Structures are given as structure tokens and as C-alpha cells.
Length: 230
Image (cartoon, rainbow, N blue to C red):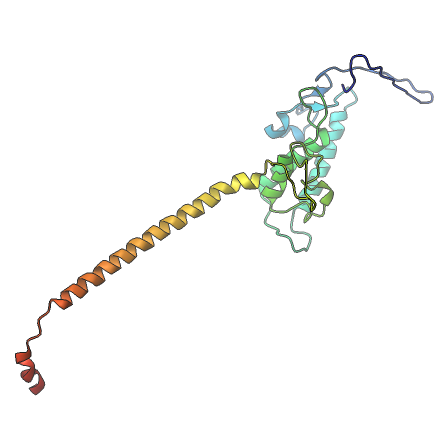
């Protein structure tokens, strides 16, 4: 796939008392869909099955990968719980969190195919969804090697500054999903401010009316002696 038409390809195979078979695949011929038969664990979510995956053959490789993905899932769901005492946030684990972990592990173990049939890694968004929906980073989960700022995630970090901050734009769910919440908070503040202003204007009007009424009262000084005698 990475060779030009005129470049030779040399394949060397070594072994003892062994037979080998070499097959050539073109385009997406080496990619297969996940089904309930070859991947009973990973074939239950559309976020996973919408892609074809690399490397299925008659040796049941998908079954083995599916078992590995299920074990990886159990390990990650445990890592993203509150079982470890640390200084990180540890919210209750939700169904959305477990779903994000399942998408991550299945794509990591199987590896999606791109349009040319090349095996690729999960996307940056898939990685960040785990942190965002679980409320816990990979570092806090004790697995810093899987942190989303590594460059092996597709559509992720490609350039960093001198302190490893990403310089390129990232498809970060926190920036998108929080916008509605921030917009709601701003709208609530504006509404409360308007209501407070209306109340102040009403109070000012009432105070003005009372002041005007008092200023219109005429005091009869001829009755002053009677008031003093009483």
C-alpha cells in the first residue's frame, strides 16, 4: 500500500517444518464488519459497528480481539471508578461513561479501516469522550500512557509548544458540550438582572409616590395650641 508501482517488494519468511501462505489484499479487502458472531461484545453499539475493521480471517482473529476488548473494558471501568484515593475528581460512573469506554476499547483493539483499507488508531474525540463523560482524566485513572494528548490518536494533537500544549485545533467535546450550559447560565444571569432592575424601579416609584403625598400635606398651625393643651 505504501509502495509505488515500480518499487519491488521483498518478503522474507523463516521457519522450521512449517508451511506458509501469502495473500495479497487490495483497498478494503482486508477489512470486515463486526457482527454478533465474530464480535459479540463490541457489535452492540452503532458508534463501533459503523466502521469496518482490519484483519479478519478464518483463524477467528476477531473473536480473540473481542475477548481482549471485553477484558480491557473491565479494567478501564475499574480504573475510572473511585476505588483509588487521589486528589482527582471522582464522580459516580454513569451509563454514558461506560458507553464511551466501550467505544474506546473496541476501536483500540480492533482498529478501524480508513478508505484505503489502512489500519488506523481511534480518534482524539473518542479518547476525550472517556475523560469528559467519566469526569476523570487518564492520568487520574492511573493510565497516563493513554492520555489524549499523545500524537497517535487520529485528528488529535499534531503540534505542541515548549510546554507540550497543543497548537493545532482539536475536536474537544468540552468546548462544544459546555457551550449550551454556559449559554444557559448567561441567559439566567441576564434574566435575574432584568428582574432585579424592574423591582428596583417599582420600589423607586412607590417611594416617589409616598414622598409626593407627604409633601402635599398642609400643617394647620392654628391648631398647635390645642395639640399642646391636650
